[in-house]
Amino acid sequence: MNFGEIAKTELHLHLEGAAPPEFIRRLAAEKRVNMDGVFDENGAYDWATFVEFLATYERACEVLKSPEDFGRLVSAVLEAQAAQGVIYTEHFLAPDFCGGGDLVAWKEYLAAMTEAAEASPVEVRFISTCVRHMGPEQAKITAHVSAETAGGLLTGFGMGGDESQFVAADFAYAFDMAREAGLGLTSHAGEVEGPNSVAETLDALKVSRIGHGVRSVEDADLVARLKDEGVVLEVCPGSNIALGVFPDLKTHSITALREAGVAITVSTDDPPYFHTDMTSEYRNLSETLGWTQADFDAINQTAMRAAFCDDATRSRLLAKFNGA
Ligand code: ADE
Ligand code: ZN
Image (tube, rainbow, N blue to C red; front, top):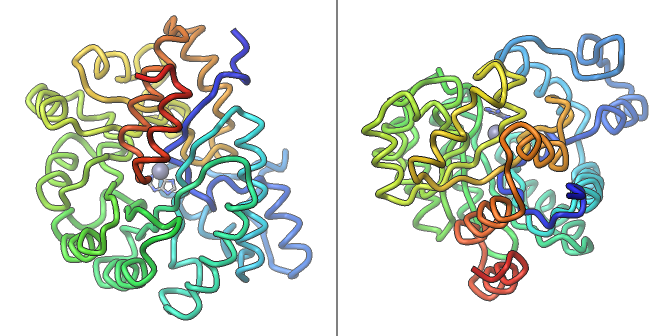
């Protein structure tokens, strides 16, 4: 199998987290922003724990200042994804890094990112994302600017950040606002925290997808619930292994969850931070777990069914994954 050539969907990718280190270094040099501690001696992003990862990520974001910077980043990330065979993707964008929640500024950032996305051969939708450790009040501001700009390529609302902070119910108001604006909903859960975090997220935020959700495997009742309710997991195996959620792919819960009938998709999360890309993910799934083209078609069909896009786009792209 030529893993690079397999057509792919990628639902779970943080735009800022996909920035190549060279991209951030170049902007830092242009803008004279101090990046001490962000990179290791090999020039890769420097972090060791989940909390350090989030801190390095936010430091790197300090160089992304203007709408033009974000437009350039969308173009660079989409170019890399196209080279990996990605034909449909959704990018998590954090308004907190794009004007700090100011609506006028956010519109300018979103316009620049939309222009870049529309110039790409990859079909793209955006999921605006609140950052959990910034708290529920900031999340409401993020939801408000997202609701005001819903439509066009902005079709989803989500939450990333430190899952150990706050409880899911604290963010119900923000997610209700986004739902009322017609945005599709997803939230990180069951990544660094256990199955309760996933159950609370489903109860309080009523999302159709969960970012990661891989620790759901620790609770058989929750696994049955995910299957019965058709909740789709955005699984990012390389990210989970890099962050120490599982030691390796053999022991990763993706196999048990699939066998239990849970709907699974595969993405990279923040590829340069975790030294991964979509082609490597597919190659590892094939070489370590024996996945075949039929398995890849199945996850991509699941992803397109769960995608936050219009039905015409969904049908057109589903046909590229053996119709379904
Ligand atoms: N933001 C970017 N990547 C993330 C991850 N893996 N978990 C939580 N928040 C994130
Ligand atoms: Zn993520």
